[in-house]
Image (tube, rainbow, N blue to C red; front, side, top):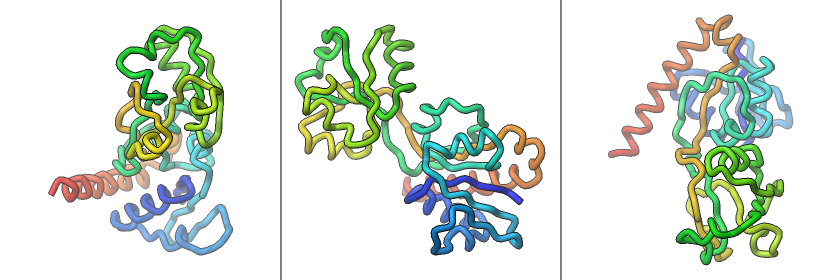
Length: 219
C-alpha cells in the first residue's frame, strides 16, 4: 500500500483531482469525516491529511511514501527528499515586501534590518547567504503584513500571488526571493527504492496529466 501525505485544504483537493485524472481511485480521500487517515485496501492507497508544514516531515521519516506540498514549505523545511514533479498549481512568488518608499534601492540603505516572516530559514539563507547581510528575523505565523504597519519590522518575507493583500495595506514587492513557488510531489528516499514498481508508474502518469494541464492553459 502507498501512503500519500496531503496538505489540508485546496491543495489536497487539487492533488486528489489530479490523481483521479491519472486513473487512481481516490474515493477514500474524499470521505466526509474528521479522520486524518483515509484508506481503501482495495485500491492500495492510504491518505494522510496533515498541516502543510508537517508533510515534508512525514515523508522524510517514512510515515508517508509520497507527499504533495508547496515549494515554499519544502525550502523552509530543508528535508532530505526526492522532489519529482512540479504540479504547477498554487503558483506564487516568495518576496521581500514593505512600504513603497523602500523601493528603488532605498531598502538597501536601512542598517540593522528587521524582517518579519513565516519563513525564518529561507529568509536567513537569502540575506546572509546571498546578500551577505546580517538581519534580525522576527517569526510570525499569520497576518504578516501587519508587521511593517505597526513598526514591528521594516519589511516582510512572504508568498505573493496576486499582490492584492499588499496593495490593500499600502505595501509593495521590493525584491523577489524565489520565483515559481508551486505544489510539488516529493518521495521518501527509501520508498523510491523499495516501492519502485508502484511509485514510478504513478509519477509517470501524474507527469502526463501535468503536461495535459499545462497545454490546456496555453490554449
